[in-house]
Amino acid sequence: MACHRDEDDYEPDQVLDGDEEEELEEEQGGQRSRQKRRRSDFIDDDEAYDGGVSRKRRNKRPIGSKFLDIEAEVDNDEEEEEEDEGEDDFIVDTGTDLPEEEHGGRRMHRHRPLQPQEDEQEEDVEALERRIQARYARSSLSHAEYDEEETTDVVVNQQALLPCVKDPKLWMVKCAIGREQEAVVCLMQKYIDKPKLNIKSAVALDHLKNFIYIEADNEAHVREACKGLRNILALHKLNRVPIGEMTDALSVESKAIDVSRGTWVRMKMGTYKGDLAKVVGVDDVRQRVRVKLIPRIDLQAIANKLEGRQVVKKKAFVPPPRFMNIDEARQLHIRVERRRDPVTGDYFERIDGMLFKDGFLYKAVSMKSISSQNIRPTLDELEKFQKPEENGARLSTLFSDRKKGPFMKGDTVIVVKGDLKNLKGWVEKVEE
Amino acid sequence: MRNAQPAQIPTSFGHELRACLRCRLVKTYDQFRESGCENCPFFNLHDDNERISDCTTPNFNGIISMMDPSRSWAGRWLRIGKFVPGVYTLAVSEALSEDLQNLCEDERVQYVPPKRA
Image 1 (cartoon, each protein chain N blue to C red):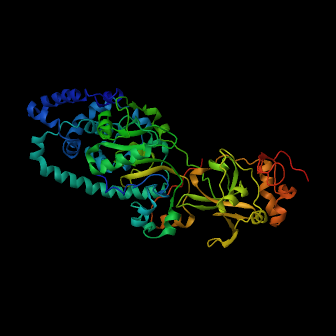
Image 2: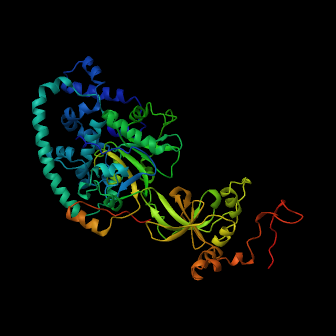
């Protein structure tokens, strides 16, 4: 019976199922009134757990086991016991140790929240208590044994952990995009505030946008848990992950450690978008990195700004990359401060709030604004990056491009003398 | 069987989140500093910034809220079924340093390094 329910999709007819079954029992036990049972329908799972379980299980075992042959292949008895210490003792009790029987029994109590048989329970409380105590006393003993086993036998075969029909299922639940983590954490909070939530876990994967997974015994539990969460969308269509795909759903690779000192990265946004940069420092905590890049600085614009002159803002103008020439900056009467970095002890030139060293710009950026995967610097780029170091870091020799003068092809210029004074233009060509 | 008292739940998302390199519990840096790691008290993360950066990482992949570790299949599959309920990550990107692995051994707790991709 339990097994049959498993394979079909979980529908509200579960209630009916339960009733039928109870009728069976009723014939055997024959005590309870229909009324009582009705009432018990509303009683929560949890109460059923410790109460009805043991009796139920023994009764039902033969029925369940008929259907559960398949499981024995994937499941590992030992692992099972390890994971569910509290419950497996029933097997020991009755002297049986066939795993499928256990499954049959457990299924039963998990999926039938509706049969607490209050009357019996009341009579039985003391006996029950004794039984539970005995059970836990024993299980803590066995737990110690398992622990020892575990440390010696470090990795249990992952194969043994594959999901089987008795396990909770995964549902794919639509979620507001970008809110996946938040939704999952909210569910956790909700569970803490209200532990009867009945879902087992909730998963947000970095590569799966717009969806989260929720693990539960049935769909009603998923709905119940999601009720009132504004990040959860389209609850009317829930998709259950087929049992064979559950492990794939939860497979992730450890992200390669991306960024450390010396890593080549590319800038993802702003003026330097697409530019190659080298990581010179990582601040894990604040998730920031310091990179060095070839500056794209419009010194004239800085000079204008610092002198309070009107800044001609040209849209989408990106200065070409070129090493900073301090002398040139000074010529433009830009203030250059020399600063010692308190952490590294290196000296930097500071111009308009930016730090330069050996012609490079040193910039602190957020981890998010650089990409570090599959960065393949071109030969050209590498050559350019090597230059200052090879040449012994003498500023005046750094600027091979600049030897021809302060201009380069592509510069925007304003003519300051002669007939064309005040006209704007672009440098087309630079001759010696 | 009831689960243990849940761990602290992250109070924010994104940058400040870190994951314990042993048990993969996810919390903010400040939460680790305030109250350490609920599953790995022997790391003594409490008020030890250096230890926190050695034992936790901001580089992890995916998060899972584990409400019912003892009954969850995902908990079993990800081997976090015996930890306290809380928010975990599916995979961390770094391994514990050798010193800290030795510490785990001394404490007789299991440490499984992350699988390399």
